[in-house]
Amino acid sequence: MSFQEDDLVRRCILNIVLSFSFGLILLLWAYGLYGVIKTFKIYFYPQYIAFVFALFYILFSILLEHRGVEMPYILVSGAILSLFATFFITCVVNGILWIYKKGLPDFNSCLLEISLTSVVAFIIIKLITFNNKA
Image (tube, rainbow, N blue to C red; front, side):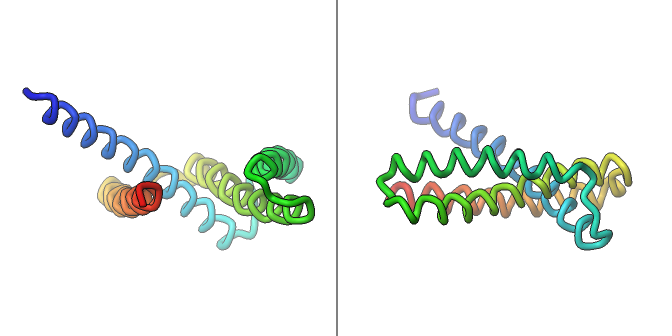
């Protein structure tokens, strides 16, 4: 094998692993969102959500400050980013607990779901890396 073939195999394996990992996270997010919409219930304490929001708020505010964002916009932008990140993490954890409580669907449905979310994850990853190259 030449150097270019090794690089191609490495990139293929990396993309497959990233796509299926991110696809699993998207699947858990979808299950969690479905559980919240269907039952109007979150399977853990709201104090944990507040703690995660506080961590994300501090983290995103520091990152925005490092990027040169002015003071009033740091607070609002940090809150918006924290809100989205907290919602995503809450849905993923709720999805894990939903699957733990309800169990997985049959094998064929589960295979279809992970396949679809992995394709969506691959597209998202490629869109993100395409924007970074431009």
